[in-house]
Structures are given as C-alpha cells and as structure tokens.
Length: 335
Image (cartoon, rainbow, N blue to C red):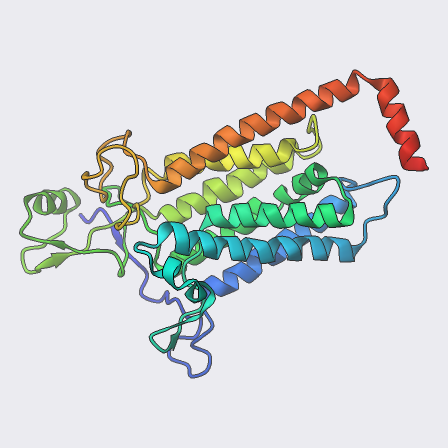
C-alpha cells in the first residue's frame, strides 16, 4: 500500500504550456489577479455595510479603488524586497539592487519569481497608512475594513504556490503526502532514506536518488491562514470593541497559525534554522525548539499585535471615560 500521492501531472506552472506567446501566462500570476479582485469586492461590501461611514466625508468607489491600489503597489514592492534581501542567500541583491525588480534571468523572462509574505505585510501596511494620511482618513478604521478581505484573497496566493509546485513542506509519512517534482532528492544509499522509504511503502531498490512525499503546506496555509482566519474576522467585523481590533486579530492570528504551520513547511535550505540546532535535518521535524526565519517573523507579529491592541484598547477606554472631551472634538469636526 502506498502512503503518498504524486503531484498531478496535468498541473503546470503555465496556464497554456507549450503554446507559443501564451507560455508566459502562469497560474501564480492569475491567482494574484483573483486575490486582488476578491479583496476589492469584499472591501466594497464592508464599506456598504457602513464600516467606513463618516459624518464629515462621503466615501466613494474611487476612494476604495485608490486605497486598495495603493496598498497593492506597496505590498508588491515590500514582498519583492523581503524575498530578495531576507530570504535570498548571498549578497547578490545587496551588491546589485537593480536586479530586485529586473524580470529577466540569463536572458529569459522569469517575472518577479520570489515574493515574501512578511515583506508584503510591511509594504501593504505602509501603503495603507500613507493613503490614510494623505486623504485624512482614520487609519485604524480603514485597515480594519481591509483585513476583512485580505485572508480570503491570500488563499488564492497559496493555491498559486501549490500549482507552481513550490514552498512545499517537509517529508511526511502521512497518506496525504505529495511527491513534488521540484523537491530535493536524497541518495538511496543513506540508511535514514531506506528506513523512511520502508515506512511509506516506496520501493527504492532500483533508483539512485529518491524524491519523498512532502506535506502540502501550501494547502494548509490556504485553509488555515486564509479561509479559517477570514471566517473568524468576518464574523467579528460587526462586534469589534475598538477601531484597530480586527487588524490586530489578523496580525496576531496569522502569526500564530503560520508559526505552527512552519513546523510542517520546509525551511529554506540556504538559511536553515535561525534558532536552535542549526545542523539539524531541515527535511524532518526533529525538534520543536528549532525555529525558522518565518517563525521568528511570525513571533514578532504576535507580540506586535498584542502591544498595539493593548494601546488601542486603552485609548478607546480613556476616550469613553472623557465625554466632555468627545463633545469638544465633535464641535471641532463640525466647524
């Protein structure tokens, strides 16, 4: 009995593989289009529910479009910077920074292969803050509205990673493990490789290099960091206690879920573990005290969300306790 599955042979990174002029169209890029489109329509729905209502300013559809467009531009810039400057080994991009946004490699069009979530998070947040400052809109309220849409859009991004056969997990004996064609192979002469192959019923007697099944961690992320997190935030959107609460829920929730999923996702081979036994096998989960780069960044997200939520909650309580001050501020707004 085989305790694993092969990556579907009909799935290719290109939407039309082998078709001239259409070979540049990739599923990953199309998923970005789906993600941004989904986010826009959900933001529009949230706005219609009154989440962005203001007695002094009427929100228009142009406002919504420019807000999300600004966030997307900064998100893409941040994601690319994070990928090339944090996750890429060596100092190539530090020495030749113009290559960061150069979509060709060795004379071939590659697009912007390599995007970092955490870089995109910082970039997108910065973009939204800049837009709110420029248009004199309440940042916490607008960002709350945006995070009602982000997780569901994010789901498409991880599905795109799966279609690309990238960012897969560590090797596993689970029956839903998948053999990804682009995964690293191992010598069949190694004792641990032979033992692992026996566990999953894989015959490696006639091969020199073995490709083991991996956790489909892209799908784990699409479900838990996308659909589940979106559902929680969506159900809480009309019950928030203070502006910024949903943003903190998203930041902390994503950080928490991603932190644990990182135990199933394979760390970058060139980076390995940043904390713990740096010589440990990155292909198996041998210790819960070995932490990847992604886990460190997720931990910072969790801590940051708690700190910001505490500050915003304290300010909201203080504001509620000062009715006279609130009346004064309302009079200023009317003037």
